[in-house]
Image (cartoon, rainbow over all chains, first blue to last red; front, side):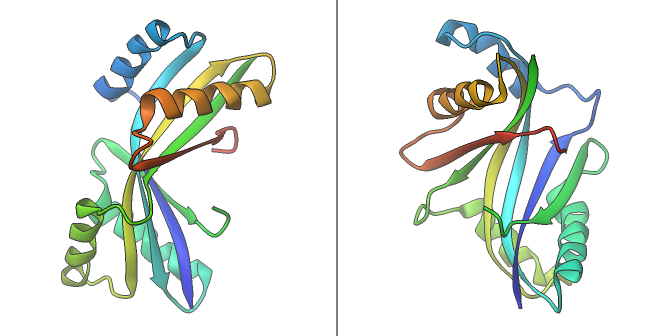
Amino acid sequence: MIYPVIVEVTLREGIADPEGATIERALPALGFTGVTNVRAGKSFRFDVDAQDEASALAQATAMAERLLSNPVIENATARSGASR
Amino acid sequence: MIYPVIVEVTLREGIADPEGATIERALPALGFTGVTNVRAGKSFRFDVDAQDEASALAQATAMAERLLSNPVIENATARSGASR
């Protein structure tokens, strides 16, 4: 069966995030106040052909760690993308 | 109160996604088979200081549409990030 999966890749705590910091600095000029801790990351959506959802997520997690993220500076989490 | 929010920015249907296509082509060489429809996107996490969660999400949606995405080619969705 085909299972839709979402992988989110985020920078680890303590790793500098210049993109997030730039967004945060730009917000007040656009009228958005009270927004803090902006962190930028990546998301990937794909379909996995697997026996069941658990093995689809296991394959997605392995992909996320080996191909989609840099484990030195990034965390990757895979979850079901069915409830888009 | 402070509400954590996640914004996901994805390319609209029909918009070419070279990053996703490149990932998809690389997968078989790494031993991952049965993965299709890879689409790359961006995610942003931040904290919004607002009266309640609904207004926090409304502000995040406005930010997502005005600052974090290009509405011509991208969709942006905001959701609560509490259940990380």
